[in-house]
Image (cartoon, rainbow, N blue to C red; front, side, top):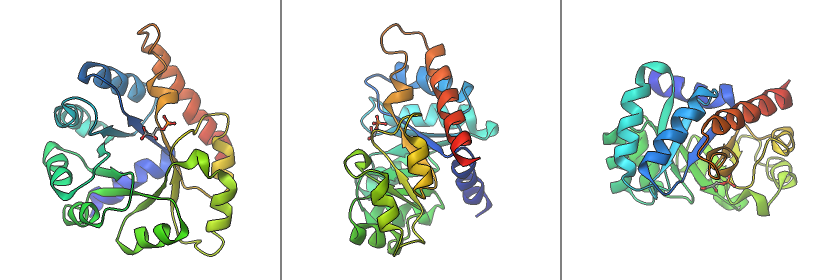
Length: 215
Ligand code: 3PG
């Protein structure tokens, strides 16, 4: 139980889960390392990354002692959830409500972030036992949606994903989000020239934007 509490705290403290959805295992590992150097404490390796389970296992072993939460994303069924947990994932993320994933995660006390779009889905996500509601795809809803939906559902811990940047993250946090899911702004920062110090810089910039919005 304390492990889960500490893992949730890593997300709460930094306010960012970094979503690594890239086309190669090597790039995913390089981006993860550069982002952690920049201060990222929660990583979501999507199952669409080639050899995703191996990437998860490598990162989980590498960062176990360093206070970095390693997770798996785009989990669509219980089988994949269990495989990810066995590889070392302590965070499971799905783009939609998948009660079997949440049940499996809760069996092993992994943190869950589960996708929702409508108020009904937000409530069903909480009832299914998820820790955090992933508002997805967030860019088509906007921060005002969070204000509106959390008027009646103020208990919902919402983290938007899709289109969140350092420039707009304050709007999401001020609307009541507990944190955000971030992908391309950080993970694609080195795409043009392979300079991974740009990933580190983008991670720092994002973390500073979250801290500024919270202060
Ligand atoms: C994903 O699952 O890849 C997310 O939707 C990423 O969104 P972003 O790249 O716009 O941050």
